[in-house]
Length: 377
Image (cartoon, rainbow, N blue to C red; front, side, top):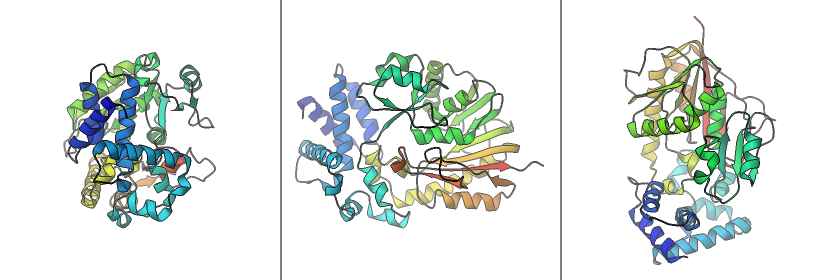
């Protein structure tokens, strides 16, 4: 391992914690390393995430650098000979023991967690093939539904690519793209992205709406909305307004919406392939606390859906408490909302379902999506 990479890895592992996630520490450390070549930055990131992915196999008596090197060797072995790791070994070492109480653990999911995650891009509407040709080393799923979802398999830093700075694509996981497709907004409609974060789904909704109509984007963190403003400018998205909302009774606007997207805060189990650090910092009590928050947020936004409008609930987790149980509780409390059947574009051969369960083995983050339509008065 390169000496400079080794020092970065040691610093990130030393300062990562539940309060300061490894990906944030890594970004700060790479920013501090002025003039670091892109290939060394990529090597450092790969070593850091390998350490967390293979933490259950590492010898704690070794130095952090030695452990990171061992993790990289384990990753190489798994990439070439995954069968050399038994199911029982993966079950005991890959995820925390409490997880079996919160969800049915699928062995195929466990095996997917140990692979390095794919990188997905969302091209501007109708430009998927054109973008893939420009970037090279790309793959696009079959069928028209995901024609603008592009998996990049190269090694270039895409944030330096001229196509990125020209707003020709966003880095967005394919499961998140499916959330936007489940919303199915139409040009000229009015939507509310209630927990917009940095705005990935807001930008997708705008693209699907052909930059027409209006989207309200709210979040509790002002810095995320500032980030959305920068992204929207680069993507030339203008049909949105942003507002801070902490999830309370007072919502950003009294507007009645054609659609509301609640991409709620969650335990994030569906991102454990991409974010292995979270496997070791997430606690079972987080799941219960967040399930209560999710139910409350659904109550808050329901009144803003106009008769005939659509409400979409999405979480990048797979626990029972945050998915099916939240949806069932909402339907009991709000019988005027009727389930909208959804089709998984990654598995078009499967019939429409009341709710979508997207698993990393299908190619993206784990995600649960439910959609309802409010009955017309």
